[in-house]
Length: 252
Image 1: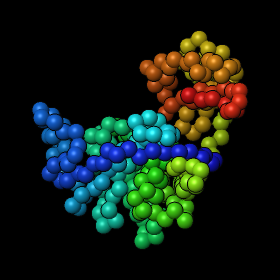
Image 2: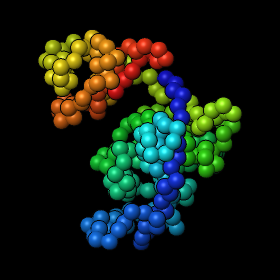
Image 3: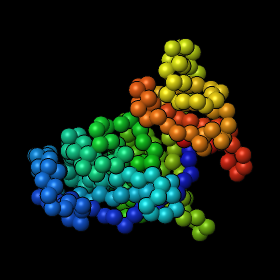
Image 4: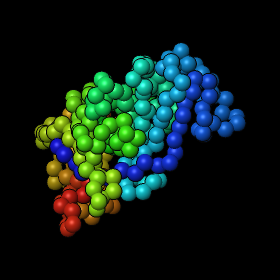
């Protein structure tokens, strides 16, 4: 599945050192956070510094869209999963991406995604953010596609920015077909998490539930009940409906 999208890199740039944080947000009195950080030093990749970027995906300007942190790991170090999880917890973004070169080829990288509490199998906006940083900082050539090696297989990204477009990228992700739900008890659990809306279709993919509502208006006015959605036991729930021009669908 392909997706064209734009991305804006904010000016917030972090440099992490083994004993301190430069230009970060550590103010006086945050002793608990300092202790937590220092407790992970045994897992620290032995290198002078590791840059981390905050990138706003799906927007044309900073401080909008869907933010993600991107950590560029040098090619001469290996970071442990524990250390990555601690960094993701400290960044406290929906996802923090960790990118490392696989070879001296500037188009092949490993990519892992972490929420503040766990590693995940796939994340779209953090992949977009990673491609943005690699192309912008010239770690990858804009003349070639980037290949990301991930837990969900090989994902690719290309820079399609032109004279009439600003930060336009094409991502190629594995297709996840939607299967219609047939178990009545499972359907009832899903419907109970949605509230009073008109539902046309209930299905699921490998990761999420997929719900089609009866109208665009219902999607735009949908008020999620996050506690009930979390209780049904999938990674997430996608809400969609057919829409009028200029888009043929809307989704939440």
